[in-house]
Image (spheres, helix red, strand yellow):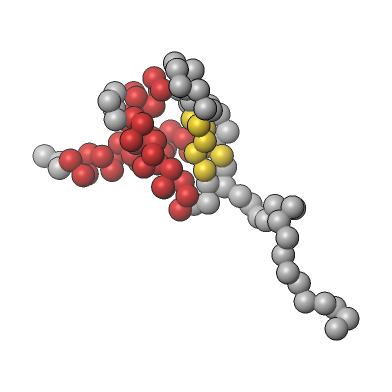
Length: 93
């Protein structure tokens, strides 16, 4: 018999695996509830955000509070954004 913590971890990992399987695609509440549990899918998405952050990824919400709500995994950054300023030493000084 698994304890509650192990079950939660397993469901969180399943939700995160679903996001990783569909990067850049919006995933609705019905699909998330099927994997993460009917009454706990929002918590599993929240916990999956922490897993994504460890890999420099991000889980976004579409901002809708209805049956149209959806979440998406923004793929990991490959490098620095072109608009991100970095300090460099002068070549001539």
